[in-house]
Image (cartoon, rainbow, N blue to C red; front, side, top):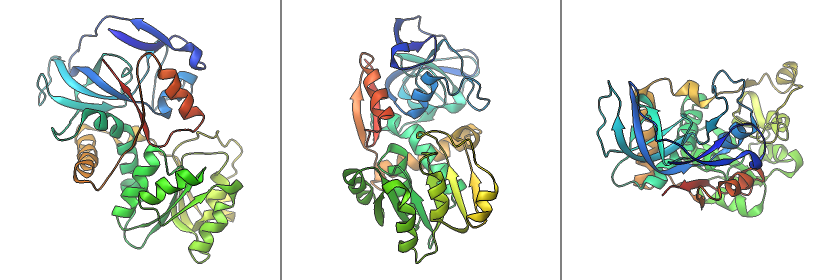
Length: 329
């Protein structure tokens, strides 16, 4: 089968195209004939080596890139129940989706409704489950609450805006361009602001009568985090769930006190997908919203095994509005 692999960490030049044997599922595993793979920052960070020493996401080279996909069950390993050959399925947080086939632990696999296209399912897994746990478990959004979503035109950001609005919260958004701000407004943001070198925090305080928001969702890191503190209310919550703009390495906890006795957390998806029932519950809610029209996810470009580097470049340059998808033969 054809696959995209890396033997070393680095830029797009380390990406290799190989023909490798189709893997065989072991006990508790399934073989999936992949039709689509989601493409996200985690793939870029894997290639760059940012998870080389991670305990949450252990991965080492050589490896096949890609951590989410959708397709059909091709074969079952021993001790697998509840799945059958030909079932439409999707998964995330198992490496190997930039390939024609992938072996995945059965407990990570979720059924895809017949009415939901497989490309949408692939696009919605990592981003959808991330947005779900952030809004539901971490932010605990609800009626009367306010939140700020950074990078609101991206795949996770668009879903966070929609979920927060659906849960009754007032959602403010930030983006890098006016065109991206319009996307956030279309998804339900009460106001969409430009980062404006951190002055978004002043605008958010103006919009909230000087109070600041209950929750800030910040996947950017160094360029925005301290201004995210300024945008939060006293005893508010700042959720730093990524660092696409670079890590913050010089943070003194006293800054949280000076900013208003804030709570700061750095969650990860894996810790909020501890078992099969939780994964299936989150996926069912996201898939249901997509089918009913309550949620929408925009596919931001379609790529193949021949040009996946272009998708990585678009992500690194922050040219992506929505979620890129890799179409497999």
